[in-house]
Figure 1: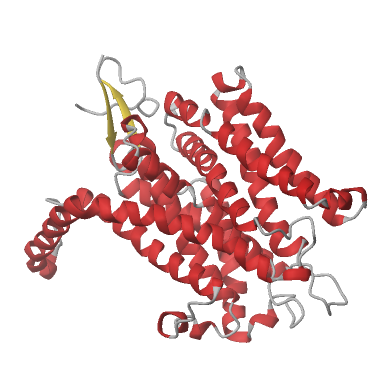
Figure 2: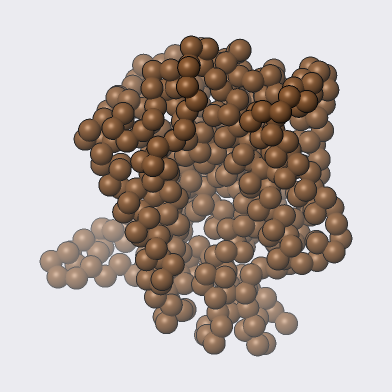
Length: 419
């Protein structure tokens, strides 16, 4: 029995699957609603659609769109390290979808930064005016370079899709030969140099994931003691690594359901087996830091901070850790998916806690609550990311099909691919 993992454009093998579905239409409406408020932000100013003030200069656009987005895009570098650097070849099937998720994730992280900056038209200043002593400069530089690396890593997928198939109509047909020539040069060049970009991507992710924690250390007494710790960069890095594989499981599971494909159960279950040790390490540092600094006393005070910290640790770390250590859970993809959702929830809450709940400017007299416009833009970005993911996997060979030449049982329902 021969199994071949073949990345294909889903529109090519699933012609009956339309892009527009009821769920997609809902996402389009959410995206359009976000774009309305986004237009208001750019034309009328950031204060017209947000509850941000001089005392509260950031909100969910930084806490969710940027900080959380960076963490949830960690599946790109974790799977790249697993498949390419550690040469675990049987994980190749999940690398391209993880790469696409990371590429889109970082794209919207960059957009989130542009939207949140008051004078957004000066966002390019960090490229020209360097401040090597700034943690924010390091984060911004690494994010920009890593996003570029992700697009370069995606180029072989583009060349694979169009090489030998460029057939521009009408007067544009004169460009066919030139485009084919460029695609061939790119294909030959990237095949010899891609290892450099893969290593660079892993290293860059390691740097800026931890530096986000450095930013909050600088906040000093503005941060609640439950989160303000010298090891915050390490905790940020470990939490990003811990959510990498769960995010891949989450994305792969939902994508297979959305397109009517059979999920790569064996691969995803093996991936799930790696989550528990990372979660355990993260939890050990988290609790150890709490004990060493003796900040556990703040948990006895009933307030928003203590409740959110307990939710973050219990639901976001302890519960999924127990699930990933359970043998019965690790035999069920549905339960592994549920455990992955808990990990993702925990990292999202952790970033919200660090950047919003724990952060309290010294002169603020009122608490910050996101406006409807802020929420709309954030949901609109998430909807656009999903819409773009769906479009790209239907056009480019991203998702691999496990083609069993005996009975094709891993193909889309009621569909077969010719050998």
